[in-house]
Length: 202
Image (cartoon, rainbow, N blue to C red; front, side, top):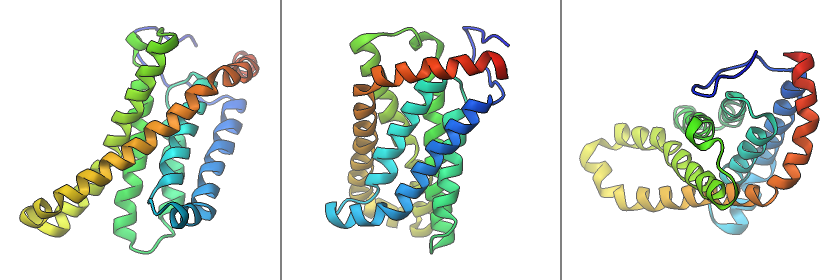
């Protein structure tokens, strides 16, 4: 099946794509469960692993597969696995939904037809914008949860804190993608090996 240049097409997973998505998803989950709290205590910043590593892995998966839907799948599974076991189930569900939406936003922005042919610094700049926008989107369910709990006037009181937290979280997603852009040439070398599997499995 060939991908038309003017729209996003969801292809079924090839065997290699399924294996790669599983490995990167597992890396995200394990890092969050076993390193997230430790790194948070050292840095005194919440979400360093979830956002910086998570968005780095999103870029890596998108670069390796070049297929829409893989990043969304990884983000949805990782967010579900890391949030369902946490205390405060309702709060955790909203936060996990945010990461899943962030993955979907990254997927959509990454594969927008006008930007797929960008190269060099323009492409790196667009990837950073993609990280910023998708990171901001991931914060929306959390804000809606707080609004429902605090009410409109209570929510307004906390707006400065939430704004700072959103800026900090979005900065971590940008940092993760920034690190990713520095290793894209190495990722491209590995991508050719996965391209060989597409023809056989598609």
